[in-house]
Image 1: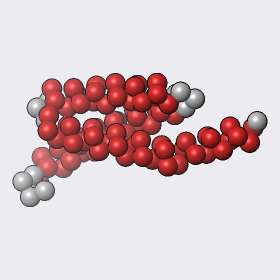
Image 2: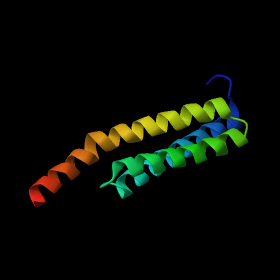
Image 3: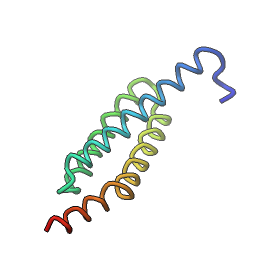
Image 4: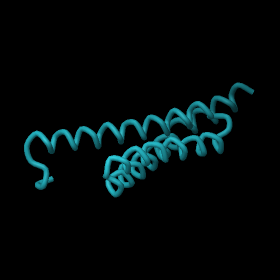
Length: 96
């Protein structure tokens, strides 16, 4: 963004990326850990995303934090249901 120039802009972008990564991997961990019970995994994922959002809002970036958390949650859930869950269902069917 043109507003953030120099070193400060790189630091903000790094924090955003770190928060996105934390939220993304928290959701993926919760969903994969609770693979047999995806409802519980979704609830734990919502709790993890809420914690990341609360941390972001405490630093004064509530709108940006909400955007990061929503983007991380949606992308992690989509990746889980596109790549991980079908393989799990297939493995359960073939294992008998």
